[in-house]
Image 1 (cartoon, one colour):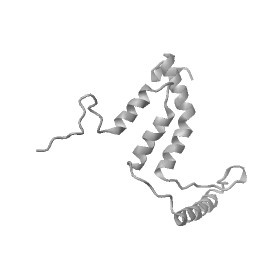
Image 2: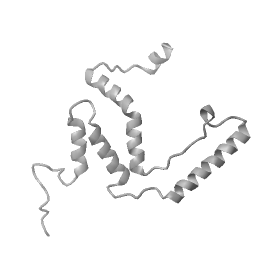
Image 3: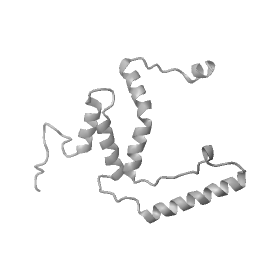
Image 4: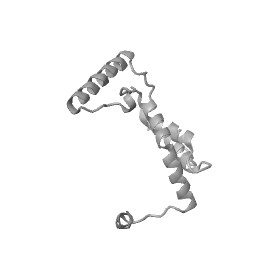
Length: 134
């Protein structure tokens, strides 16, 4: 049986690069290492494989379906579907584009949460305590 020369006694996770990235995420300066988080999300979203752009024909078909759905909802409910008279829009995205957009959307919330957790000012309250304050 051949020996595995890739094993490193000093770094048992050396063959698993995503664990190294996860370690960097937790050891970074500041509450959240966004570059590492983005790389980690990209790795998970793409499964480490290159991905193609969304096919332009598929984008066109999706845009047409959105318009049909918008008209159908307006017809059935008698409600405007877009805010301020604007039409509903849809953006087709690859997995990595979706992961990146999601990180950016949640970034303010996660920054505040991480800041509170690192300052020790985050307090857990029971469900009953939260409900009694409303």
